[in-house]
Image (tube, rainbow, N blue to C red; front, side):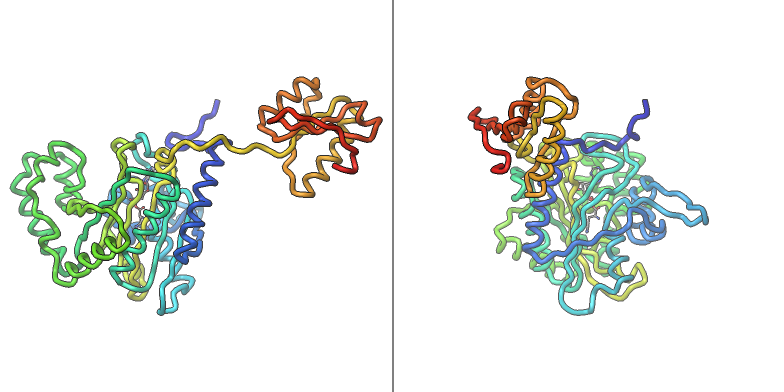
Length: 406
Ligand code: HAM
């Protein structure tokens, strides 16, 4: 038996309807904020993620599916959507320099990670990216869209964490201060943290190891190190979140695992998820366009993991089945039924037929199993009389009608 690759899963019938409902909710909610859909390729040049997400991040350094094509170009399955969307916006000149460009995407992402509840190697994201204004109120609107989406899914008990990680002016100063602190407690940190101290010391605050969390409890807070413009931006984000009536917690240790962020970062966590507790996260990335060779183009966005959302949404009510199941006994009735089924479908009904050629009883059982609303029964008697029997499978009520009255 060949099985699915580790870290992937099939989305089976039954489950697929839950995905469709989630996607419908996403389109409905994001439509109200003026978002349009964008679809980018599943793979990109490796350089895009190395530059955009950052060579020193775990995502690029350890987790990418990278391969050479037949012309020896280095390509990678996309581990996230932001860098690709920025590339597409620049390449397609989608932003005219005015107004606000609001985009969303839905699709698979790939990261070679250790398997855990809520963590796969192929997973799916709903993401949004918004370009144009560098306004803090836009950050709050983007966060409000995420919370509205979670609300539409019926997810309760999630918690919104927000932070600012400063900009090119104040972060280097904080980085130095933090590095000095880390040096003073280095003997209490794990190997990984010592490595991160060299590449990206802010990520030390993100370590899940309890000993490292305890050791860094007294680390200096980035919020005390923000420059005046960054502090003003963050205060304005919080003020707008309050206007939206969103409950949030300021979390100065929230640094996120991608290098392109500046100023606002945020994450939504949920208690039901275990160690991988982030339903979604995002932030502002005003420097990413320039990093990829484009003009200055401020951006802000988020992505949410669909598998994790589905672990959190309340179980759905039994899904609706089809309108009609055809029950035809005998060869001539079966052939007649083919035409009737086609006629009903042309009128917009959903119709299924059981082709096993089994007994009336077995076909009725199959009709119930696929949760049909009614059975259309056709035997030799019906065929002779030019009639069909229609049975309501919920009430059991049945009547015989002329075929042309169907
Ligand atoms: P991220 O935090 O790396 O951000 O991923 C966003 C969400 O994707 C996570 O909160 C989680 O729900 C889901 N996720 C990530 N990795 C996995 C995995 N291995 N298995 C299952 N779910 C996973 C980004 O990707 C940024 N591009 C978000 C963003 C958009 N920032 C600005 N714009």
